[in-house]
Image 1: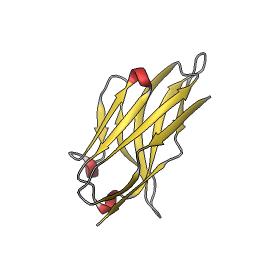
Image 2: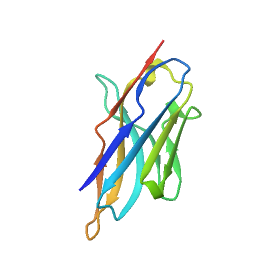
Image 3: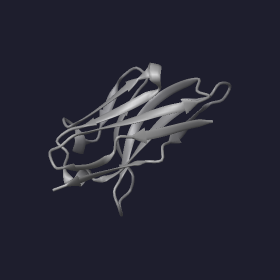
Image 4: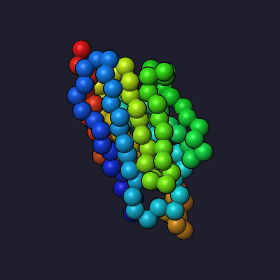
Amino acid sequence: QVQLVESGGGLVQAGGSLRLSCVASGTIFKINAMGWYRQAPGKQRELVAVITSGGDTNYADSVKGRFTISRDNAKNTVYLQMNSLKPEDTAAYYCNADVRVRFSPSHDYWGQGTQVTVSS
């Protein structure tokens, strides 16, 4: 059993910053890619950023240059530093991880989501 728990969401003014964290816990053998997705009301969930176990990153065009994803493999934690926030960044942000439990193939896990609201 694997759990992902996000933290760090909140209300911020446009131009401000927030840092999201997501900790994975449970019977983890290995964590492959970790990422952040977001879903605004009435819209589909979309990829924000992803980072591989080796540190390679990929970002949605809408956040390039403003958001930075990083991870601490020793702590099974992924971070999302969000700068220069815009009202259109308002959404529920979800952590995702491709996790392998010992003696089992890898599987996608999701956190419960954390709300980010950017006021204009």
